[in-house]
Image 1 (cartoon, one colour):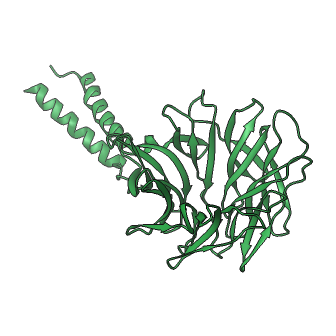
Image 2: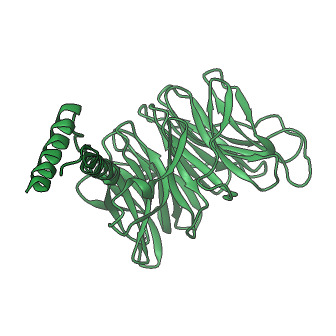
Length: 369
């Protein structure tokens, strides 16, 4: 005898299958852009990626131009690393010269150029905007390292925040409005370590202290065209560092992937206010994360779980939501680009109802037989 309550099981099974299918769909695919023992650090609007790869026993800057991966070489020394790239494909980073000193470089048209320093021997370039303005850190000689802005062939010392102790600073990011973000010594020396705070520098040349979340350290690593800043800050618990997003004059603690994670940092933020970074987690080196809509998620949860990849770092994100970072597979780590996948269309309500009724009808026929 047919009992109406038996309809619940096929309907539940139909709904469960649909839900499981939707949950299993990966959001990102993994594109390898560097050889084994490489890392990805920067990305532009067209998805070109820069970072470093291993060349023999040395590390060399690379550019993945969406066709192939190019070894950018050095300035005559052994090593180099690329940190940033703009939409024109101009690359910046640091490279050793023939004397073994790391120097800020720019790379364009197949040529790597030494940008010089602020009087000392070393430095590196961290970011470049679409107007070709470059920021980084360079040695001044006697006064120590300082954040710099390189524009029009001239390197400018950006100084530091007001400080009574050590005087040093670095610039890590610049947006297309020319606003610079970085970190600087700040305030009075207070044990156990000298204060170092994130800053932004706007058009009038003033460095604005972004403060911390209770500790003595913060540093800004990324800035979008909205003026939102991503970075790392210590909390009131010594040596507990969390990623932050600074927006509308407020520094927000983004937390960590796991409650017991003591360390996480944010490296970049795009114009959709999506933040990427790395959190100490369940694997050595940590796990790359994406923060959006008030929630942090491990990027491992957004790729095909059967692929075998572990995303250990997410360093840059563009407005197409492509992410440059590092992922490991079978004991080796590679520079990768995570590419958004086309979403699998979910069935509409009518289709789901039709499928459910078809299941019910089949079940009824079987029961009657």
